Amino acid sequence: MARIALPPGFRAAVYAWPVPGARSLALGPGGTVFVGSRGEGRVYALHDADGDGRAERVEVLLAGLDTPNGVAVGGDDLYVAENHRLVRYAGLAARPGTPPRPEVLARLPRYRHHGWRYLRIGPQGRPWLSLGAPCNVCEAPGTARIVRVEPDGRLTPWALGVRNSVGFDWHPRTGVLWFTDNGRDWLGDDLPPDELNRAPRPGLHFGFPYCHGRGLADPEFGRGADCRRYTPPALELGPHVAALGMRFYTGDTFPPPWRGRLFIAEHGSWNRSERIGYRITTVRVEGGRADDYRPFAVGWLTAGRVWGRPVDLLVMPDGALLVSDDHAGAVYRIAYEGADAAPQARSNRAMDSTCAVCGNMSMTPAAARR
Image 1 (cartoon, rainbow, N blue to C red):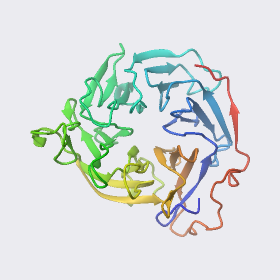
Image 2 (cartoon, rainbow, N blue to C red):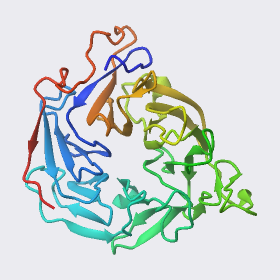
Image 3 (cartoon, rainbow, N blue to C red):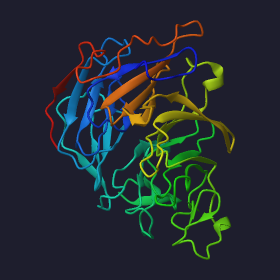
């Protein structure tokens, strides 16, 4: 972890390892952290029984699922968004153990391209999830949107023209939905930007596939389009940085300048000749305005080599920020230790195949079933 550079007083450490393919994060009422995955087909439970900021046990809670990227907690229940359905495991979030039979809440369109769903429990306790476009760029009815799941299983669209959002959150004071969106590929190194968007009401269209960023018409689908018809992003992010999970910092242990800011996990570019991203950035949000986009944690990309890819973020009750990494198969913890804290020591070992910094962490299977 000595490779991770942070502002003065902050420190990064391993929270849990190994967590193969670690993606979305959710916190249970008893302090268990639940982690989704993608190709691994697993949902993990991370147990920090002694509250020391490091999980002693990584449990495979569910296995054999179809792309369970999205996990969320509502009350005592665990919700999981697979490629083709949204399910609820009654009581499992409060009492991780033998999973009950899942209740199917909604059927989702089945496709593979951008078929990993991001899931949160929103206002009024309803599930919200993203339906990414099943393509790089195309007209795709019924997809490219963020939806609210109704009690009868209907999917009510909230934000339209959203290519692929893998992170959203509600402003802690205003309750307005903010979300990241990944720009299309194959328009060159520097176009289009990824986006940070704001959706204060349902039905707004954010441009895909016709327009990207603040007025860039798509060369194929945007011919003749008036990009002023669509809602522009609140902020243009780096091109191809793959902005994924995002959270407003609602804790009280980071210094005041960081409180209330938005933190974004940038998974890192693949469609670019020179890699960018592979970091955590932060944005200042005041009312409907977003600015001061800057790096917060960097180091997963070192001298052109990638050893980690941040995916999702979670603010913990003690104010620490958890970060999932599906490339290294790990979850990290970033905490503020005070202005007088020593800089992160270079003697700390980076994770390797033996996980020298992981102590007595272990991975133990639970009664894992569909």
